[in-house]
Image (cartoon, rainbow, N blue to C red; front, top):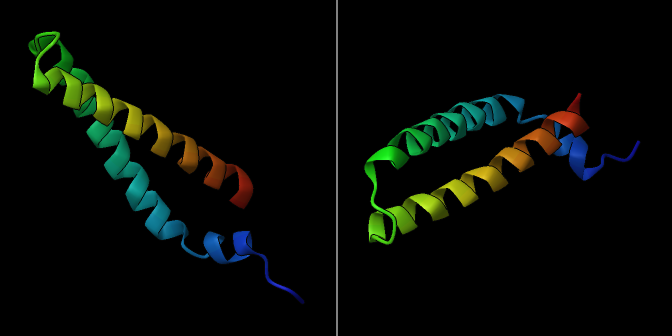
Length: 69
């Protein structure tokens, strides 16, 4: 039998769960910080970029969950 890349990746489900918890926690903390940031400041730009990166990671985690279930 040949093992595909997804078969190898699905073996790391525990690591994906830890990554999921970390990404969701950072996403919630980022969203909670937005009311305290002024638009146009460096902190706001970093938080916005952080939110974009977290959204990409959530998409990858959802793809992982879809392919491995």
